Length: 387
Image (cartoon, rainbow, N blue to C red; front, side, top):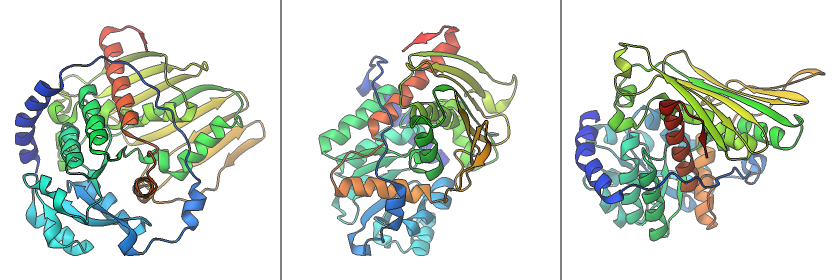
């Protein structure tokens, strides 16, 4: 699969670069807006199978096969009906396991013929970052709605092309920012924006893990052509996202530093560590980190004048912990864990059914790529960047 993606990339990336050109790094608002309550969604019974929207999953890597595909069992509005993979035997194995009709197995060459399949309403792109743009655009041109994994793409130009393709086709485009659908993160947003912490002063957000070159799921992440960047693009984006959805604001200034361990072969092409600071219009300062060099860390801290919120783990798949600390002591919030993957997929299905814009549309993904490019610029130049 990895070799196939590399060969596909070499040809197609050149075509995209030639076609997209360069556009400026302007910043547009993409502020978090809460949707209807998860409690309400949790009480609703699942739709009959024939009324659920049909989803195709593109790419059968570890994340798709271990997290996304099993999560369809908990969806109320979405069902798995098709698979796209360069490995036919592997696709057939998962088709048998999850009841997908073998006629609904596609490869990367005949992917465009998915247009002729009325069972498929939505396509979920779970490929290396450099292929997000191509398969999103081809999917939209096939008249399907699109869910695309984060980061949306590796360049601002590609992100804009994806948005334009979906608009031209009259289809929804949503970026899979699972944390914005996860109950503990939603509770943290509500606490921060309701004033229950007092006036917000500072946010600290740290995300790190060890990049493992022996793991096939990590191999492409060390290849800059496929990944677009290193720890910032992969997990630093969670730190960045947290500051934006916690404050409900967009940053006005960015400063950053970057460091990779010398002679570590994992970081020949991509960065290991990025530390960055953001200033927000309300005065909130955010200190964020991302790393490919230390053990799993997924932590968000929000400091207010009256209380401090700590979410740790913050962006785990199935385990979260939310604590509020004040002069009255520490209070751990009792929140029911829910399958965030099922919640986000059902959100897009509901948005399609009701013809509403999803909470995390393409513009949200575009904003993060713009900001990450500015973080790289700040780290490279040593300057504070005005946004």
